[in-house]
Image (cartoon, rainbow, N blue to C red; front, top):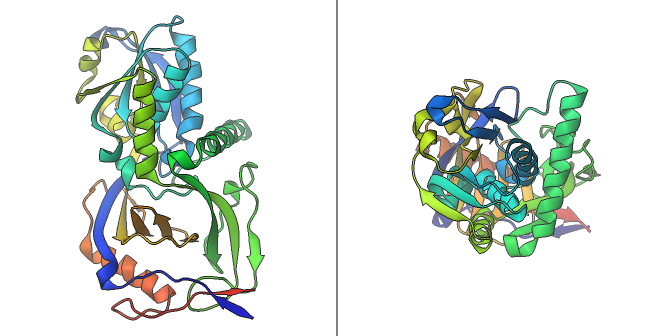
Length: 345
């Protein structure tokens, strides 16, 4: 017996807008390491924390803890720190530094909901990043994954974090690396997929979903409540760091690190989303970069991964293709009306 579930409204009237963003990817994966800058930068101790690709929201707290450990090894106890960047990675790092007893100033041109982080979906799946090419590197990264998801679970609903089922149709890309670190339970096979018009087999697993606007606002509040300060400022060249008063700096500038620190392992990956009117569906559809996330402020339809393209503006033609692809999955016509969602009882 088949139960009809609530299907999304994909009609033209439900479309809010098209948005674009750039994932800050890095060949070789994360860069989390300390260095001492030269005299032109005031001899500052810098800890790098960037290269998160498409999973900054997912792993920000795990990498923040790694950054704090390196700060403690580079500075005297109690010495203040400046954090460069106020996306989710910079905010999480500032929180962990403040919790460790450091004084923190966050220096950023844009903060929180004004950053690329606000565009994210964001479901807890570490995509768009290299896990490592040695057993030691993968084990290190797996530790970051586990600590990250534990931190997000602890933050919970007040920070806009909930657990949702993720449904994948048969033939969707499989990513065993998402599960072999032990942070998520493995997918379960389904004879009848409870989403879409085809009613074919698929799989399901549970993971965390982060309502990014809520998460970013709460992290900003947390930084301020712990005594952290924000300064609106653009760091354009290494010599600008000489004027930073703090003896230590944590660099969370993501793609900005390519030019500021001459890291050409960084590369952009353009993404686009279609935002629909909010719909409390209670589940996620995932098929590689074709996904549907029920964020509180919008139903998010993705997407794409265009390596080497650093344009952040949305491409209307491509966004309309994304919308048409989702409508096809749900058996909708060109205007987005009609369709069914089925599940076994």
